[in-house]
Image 1 (spheres, one colour):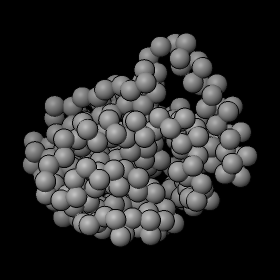
Image 2 (cartoon, helix red, strand yellow):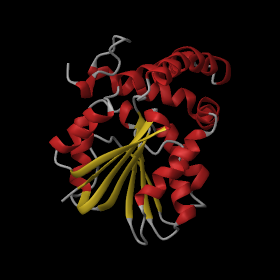
Image 3 (tube, helix red, strand yellow):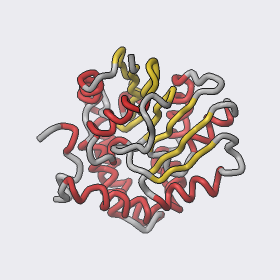
Image 4 (tube, helix red, strand yellow):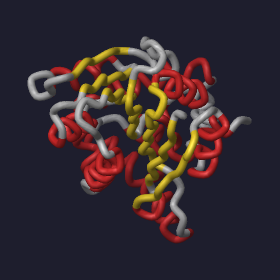
Length: 245
């Protein structure tokens, strides 16, 4: 099976069913999503996102698309650093997007919110300076299609950035991390978000997401240039980067 399309193997959900299943999960946890992120990561997701934004080297008047923007915390941080950028926040989950917009519509000066799929973006070619996505790609049904769409909507010289859970390098850290996400995270999901299955899915989606090197290889294969990645926290998360030439 292609490494890009293994999600939901354990849950016996077909590729055609994945999109609806994932959206139902996120609809059910929308209101507790930010709280759970803080608790599960002990607040470190904020450090990861801060590093992610620093790496982007955002310029005045950049046109940015935030794919899978969720509750909008990344967009908010970008705007805090530079209010002159324009950000289009997209998410396939309407409830998440509505929550995002209601929270930040008065704060974000140049913001647009669009309910759409990362695999089929409603934009012309060569629109954006930067394509950013954080903790979204593992939920996409076809990562290959999403990458091709990213390449299409970026301007020449535009940059792709992806922050996502990945594979720890150290075997001991990997073992501890695997136990934590398999056992502790679903328990927290049950007690705090009242949805154990959503956080069982989280563990499975992380496990089935391509290794850093595989995702890097696919970015190159599908047309991005000068591709690279950096690991954070020993590879628990990684940031991939690629240029459209």
